[in-house]
Amino acid sequence: MPLSLRAAALGLTLLELGSPALAETATKEKVMAAIPELEDLAKQVIAKGQVPGLSVAVVYKDEVVYLGGFGLREIGKPGKVDADTVFHLASLAKPLSATVVAALVSDGIVSWDSRIADLDPAFKLHDAYPTEQVTITDLFNHRSGLSGNAGDDLEALGFDRAAILPRLHYLKPTSSFRAGYAYSNFGLTEGAVAAAKPTGKSWEDVCDEKLFKPLGMKSTSPRHADFLTHENRAEMHVPIDGKWTALIKRNPDPQAPAGGTDSNARDLAQWMRLVLADGKYNGAQLIKQEAMAPMHQPLFDRGTNPVTGAHIFYGRGWNTDFSRYGTVWGHAGAFSPGRAHGG
Image (cartoon, rainbow, N blue to C red; front, side, top):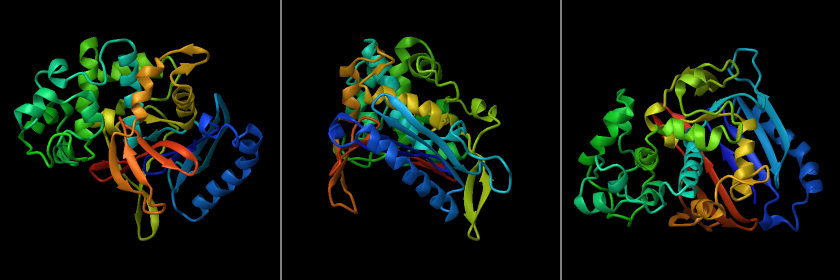
């Protein structure tokens, strides 16, 4: 299945080909033959000024067959984007976080249907019944009733995660519990933080232990301080008078599970291998298949694709769609001033 993931202000794109759904047509030979065209497309995107820079990884089955970068890390400076350039992932953090939760499910620490009230009793929604019943799945599927921008204003004012999550209690729901879809960064953040609670460790440490270190993702971190240590990092740009300008600085630590992870194409290619192999990596089953599969279940109908008219769905931290190519898993991410977006 093609998996296209774009993240951050400069754009990070990963394409995956050769899943079982396309095993009869997407041979390695066809994938390799398509790479020059993919490179030309990337060069055109840069030449047209659509993004300042981007990096690409192509995974065929369990093999990384291409890594490359195009454009500049910062307009006006010589540093070029390559496969090791670290980007803010913005909402591409959501499927990464879902994979970490899957690892906790695999280890029997939580289940996807664990209630937040049992994991993090201090967390409350506006009404009693949703507070008692809301689960990890509900928060990763954006169906808790929280509004899409819940907590974003507090983050923009400089409040941290510990201050924001308890204050979600004051927000009236925008839909009945489990009856509406509203893309909530801080709702998903609470789902991830609660899932980590039984370990006695921070969410950030759990990410390292369960995913990043086992896969050798040395440049991937949910900590903004780590991002700043990388010389080879992409700056965030905005268009001013038709030109890209590196203007915005963003510390997304408060919503790290939903939009605060940073990584590069080389590392993300290893994660793609894990996801596409249903939790297996280098021959070892790191995460049980039955813990991975629920991430991609189409739980909520988000509407229709404006191009194809086909229905599009959200699972647990992932978009799951059905197209002429078969089942498509994906997620996008971008930052604008004070807010993160993905889809």
